Length: 323
Image (cartoon, rainbow, N blue to C red):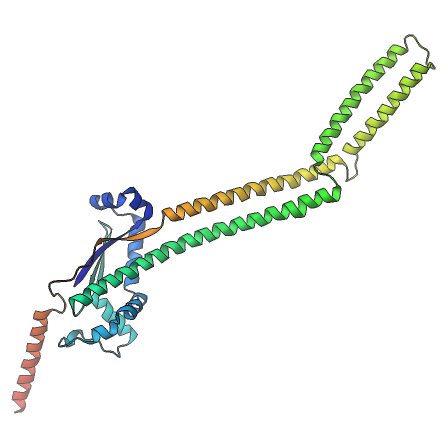
């Protein structure tokens, strides 16, 4: 019988040296314990048997039992019988105190028992790697899908809404234009106030029909017309005026900013997922490698001899009675 002991650890556990301390303290990680039980079930599964039969010609090897007719495997054995026979030739036990999985394999020769155990370890490592990487791939694929959705939403808003709005209204930023128009109106209002003050000053010593007074009044009227025109661009009720355009533009701009932040979050999430997936990758650590057995525990020689003696006695007794 060949024996090996393994533990399932995360890559960050190995880097931090928690493997040795954990085992010395007799502690096992709940996640590792769960993975070990998964591995135990896989080792006892038809999938593992199929892999072993392909690599070791398992059925052929155990069909040549020599004189050990009690442990003989028929070449025509059913799949169910083959699996039951395989489970009798391997023993997998889990120690919940140390977190170690103990694997014992039997063979009709020490060399086959060793190769049997080594192949089980190789397939177990492949299983753990595949399971670990599949989880990481699924997490990363989900994050990348969400990132692509966020990117598409951002592109749709930027191109279909923002650019279309700017092109249709022939305006780059209605808010900036509205602010500029308001600043201009305030400036013109200040000029008008100053001109009205100057007009009142003129009226203190000039008649109403004086050329200077008439000119000042005309200038004030022209300035007021300009003020009214600029105000109409900002506050007129038509839908193409700056106040309405600024509200619509702010709504689109808010969508763009929100989806931009969402896209940034998905990019950050992908990077975190990559790091976390790499950190949580699991490895099969061989604590005790399988060795070439020096003593035979299978087949059980004394038991086999006793069975043969019993059979011989029965045959001898039967022949004696017949003769």
